[in-house]
Structures are given as C-alpha cells and as structure tokens.
Image 1: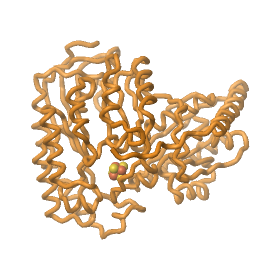
Image 2: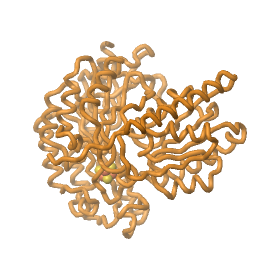
Image 3: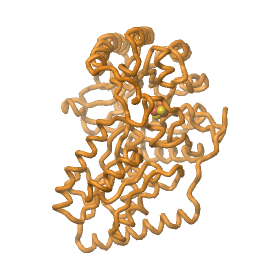
Amino acid sequence: MSTRVPARVPTEEELLKLNASIDNVRKTIDKEKSNGKRRNCCVVTYGCQQNEADSEQVAGMAVEMGYNLTETTEDADLIIVNTCAVREHAEKKVFSITGGYKHLKDANPELIIGICGCMVSEEKNAEKFKKSYPYVDFTFGTESLWKFPEILDVVVNKKKRSFILNSGDEVICERTPSSRKSTFTAWLSIMYGCNNFCTYCIVPYVRGRERSRRPEVIVEEAKQLISQGYKEITLLGQNVNSYGKEYGVSFASLIKQIAELDGDFIIRFMSSHPKDMSDELIQVIAECPKIERHIHLPFQSGSSRVLKLMNRHYTKEDYLALIKRIRDKNPDISLSADVMVGFPGETEEDFQETLDLIRQVEFDMMFSFIYSPREGTPAAKEVQMSEKDKTDRYLRLLKVQEPIAEQRAQRFVGRVEKVLVEGRSKNNNEKFTGRDSGLKIILFDGNDEMTGKFADIEITEAHAFALYGKVIRVY
Ligand code: SF4
C-alpha cells in the first residue's frame, strides 16, 4: 500500500479562534432571539451525498451558534445554499435560484444569504456572486467548511461581506457537529477529495486531493451513531477504495471493523473506482452480513480506447475480470454502475463496446448519463458530438439495459428481504418504501409506526426500477 501524509489538523490557535467566533455569533443570536426576533437557518442542498453530509455539518454549526433550523427559505433569516459543480446546468440553476432570493432580502433586510460548496470553490463563480449579487453576504469553498462560524461572525458582527476561496490548505477538522436530517440513516464521510483526474470531471479541482479521516475517529463515530439508534450507515468518499493510505489501513479493514460493532444495523458505501477495488474488500463483503449485498462500480464506457481518453486506468477486460471476481465470491450480489454516452471521440464502435459490456455484466441498476462538457476539464476542450447523436445513443442504451434490469429483478420474487422502512413513498403516498440489500426500491402497504424500523418483506412482484411486496414482520 502506497503512503500519503495525513492531512493537516487545525492548530490550537485556529481552534481558539473558531470557538471565539462560535461564541460571538451565539451571543448575538441569543440576544436577538431574546428581543423577540426569529433566527431560523435554512440549508438548501444540491448535488451528491457528500454535499448532503456537508450540509448536515453546516446545519450542525448553525444550531451550535443558536439558530433554529427550518426547511423553507421563506421562514429563514440565514439561507445557505450548498452547491454542486459537476454539471454546468446545476450551476445555472443555483444562479437563478439565488436571483429569486432577492425579494426575500427586500422583504427582510436582516436576512443573511451565503453560498458554499463545490461551485464557489471556483474563483469565477465566487467573483460573480460578489460582483453581481450584492445581496449575497458570503461564499466559501469546500475546504473552508469548518471555518463557517468565522465567516458568519464577520457577516453577523462586523457587518461585512466575506468571500473565501480554496487555497490548497486542506484541513480535516474533527470537531464539526452535524445536524442529521434522518434519525435512522446516516452519512459517514471517511475521506475527502480525489486524486484521479478523470478527464471529464471537475471534482479534483474543487474538492482537492484525497485525504482520509483517522480510522479510530470514524469507528468511534459509527459506534455513536449505532448507540443513537441509527440503523443504516453509508460510508462516503469520492473513491472509498483508496481510503487510508496515510495510516496503512485499507478500506476493507475499516469497513470490517465497523461491521463487527455490536447492534442491529446495516452498512453501505459509495463510491468505488474499479481500478482500486481490492480482493480483500470483495472477501470482507462476502464475510460480513451487516454489509449490504450491493456494489456501485461506475464503468463509464465499455471501450478501452475511450476509457484511456477518460484517464480511468482500467480496460474493458480489467472491468469484466473484476466483476467475475466479485461474483465468484458473492454470487447473488446486486451490481449498479454509472455509464456515460457521447464522450468526445466516442465512435459507434466504441458505443457498441459499451452495449456489449452491459449485456455481459447484466447490471441490476444503471445510472446513465449523456456526457456534457464541463468547463475547466480536459475533455471539454475536445471536439464535441452533436446533442442529437448523444441522445440517440442514450435512448439505445436504455433499450438494452431496461429488459436486463427487469429480468435480473425476477430472482427476488418469492424471497423475503430485510428492509429499513424509509416512510411513505414520494410518488405514491398510499405505499411505504424502503430498499433491499441491493439498493432497489421496494414498495409495500404499511403504517407510519414502521418508519425507521426493519421489516421483512416478501417480494410479490418485480420490475426494472422497483419491487413490490408484503410485510411479514417489523422489528
Ligand atoms: S474518480 Fe474520477 S469521476 Fe470520480 S470524483 Fe474522481 S475524478 Fe471525478
């Protein structure tokens, strides 16, 4: 295992400054509240699970500083938008939504508006908010999340706007509280950043280099979550299989330590890079019943030529060999993947290789994307395919994948699956929902008391995107 130097931790002086800022803001907020003012904070989140986890920390810090949390921006006195930079479309949406907050500021001049996350880790976006959105009070990039109290202190107490860019000073601050949205499922970040520089992806530029949290701190946090009644823990990182190089601890050994903790809970993890998935992890998944029977393994393209253009560091053959090793040890495992069509230079022949890989692997679920150029990445500079051709390939890909997913799902009919009940389905309020071990949605009749509990569900019907079943027992 290659080694990395552990990320910097905050100095005593930095922690004292941070605590002083928390106290300063808290005093002001408490005073304002005792004067009858409402002090609510709304965190709006775009993007991936890592952003959701980050937002829970932003919310946790806001609570620590005296704010009450609200779900609606209309009720808020502090709005923080946590942004995503993966797609340009998402960025446009954030500019447009922030434009809509102007009328809230007009109605409530004491409203504080901040933007954080990947999008404002890019200087051009932070500058745009500073210059063109005078009612935005602060921005800070992913690297400065732990310094949110200091930034807010400047706005609340010094009445100044504050715009903080990433500087490459990648600190892991373990004292940050979290206000989790769910009382039974929890994100647990194990590492940050990415070293892979896939040629289509902006993440390494906005989230910095790979750095892991200390294993003992992660295991302790998992213990606390279990003792607080959390039933599902999802370990998060851009590339979890590359975890722990600073400490000589593999991801496989970390997840095994957590899976061996006492308690009735399940563990999931994401995301995995095929080049880093180890046989040790495949073995641990096979041995530990608390680790769900699901691996999400993005392959992006079935053409080794395109994979090279993408800088993915594996070939189609490597990927297929890895799938075989996984299935040899875990024959019933559910597999999902990300795939993209229309990457610059992708020929019809390359696309056929992708279809061939899909047919050979037979994924249970697939998240398919049309490539869209991301400014600031190498692939965006290449000659682009027409939107029409990209859409055509996308639709042809779905036609291949959907019958496979439908067919794969049939193996569940008649089985009893352990499911964590998530609550009422958003699409069908009459039904309750949860996910099977393979992350597939299951719909069933239930009641609100079941939410947050495990249930054994007998599967009666199976489709490409969802399973249906009936409740056998709740526990
Ligand atoms: S592994 Fe590639 S796609 Fe995933 S975050 Fe890193 S650069 Fe982006």
